[in-house]
Length: 104
Image (cartoon, rainbow, N blue to C red; front, side):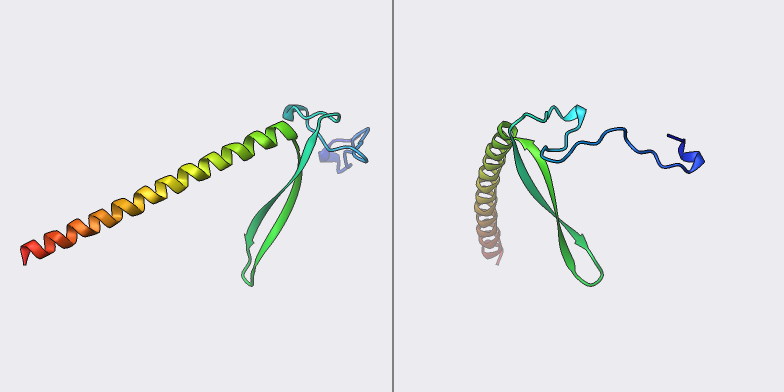
């Protein structure tokens, strides 16, 4: 293989993907690991419209399940925080109205 400066394309010596999930050495995912296909949607702003782009990746089943549980827990915490915020906003509004009436 030549260098990029020479303009010769560099082609890997072997490339095996058929029938297996593509893996990277630093992901910890091996060709024999159980994986879940995950699709994430990224919206891309276009001058004419919003478009969704799907990307599939191999994720270990255990890691996927752990992440799903973590996301559910965070959603519950967010919901509770939102409830508390709405309650406090309501109480603040009531106090401000009472203050305005007492000043009149």
